[in-house]
Length: 171
Image (cartoon, rainbow, N blue to C red; front, side):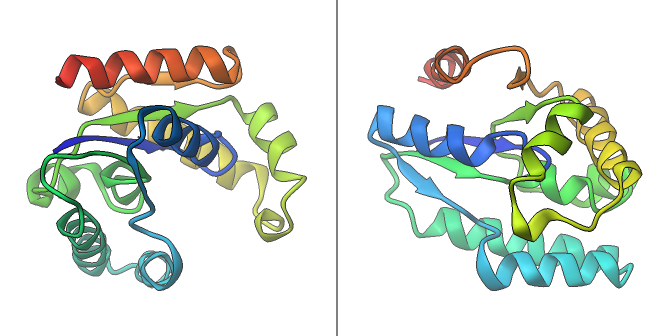
């Protein structure tokens, strides 16, 4: 199985890129934290239960991966990097076991805020909240030497080109 998780904060462009990349490569598009799994993950985070965040995150990711044919290509819309932003770095690094090849899809705060103004379900969080998560994604990506794809500096076709290059490195 060749995998690449596209991860990042809301509004970064990861879903757009994950769908486009999966289409271009005729790969499976997978959302491990869609629906109830994502809700459970957020409830655990908001409840301050890091152990539950890790359990839910690993369970959701394992379930998503186990449903894929073994010799196929898959593009994940979120993965371990999202989970890592919801727990302490020490806890993540010492307890997480399901490391999947990942690219951080990232844009700066003004771009993030501009993109999120167009989404009804993303309103209500403060600028500081978004800034915190943008910084945490970069911090956690740096810890694991995750490549960063900047959607505020590159157009979609350039981002896809960079992502294809990452997949080609796995083959």
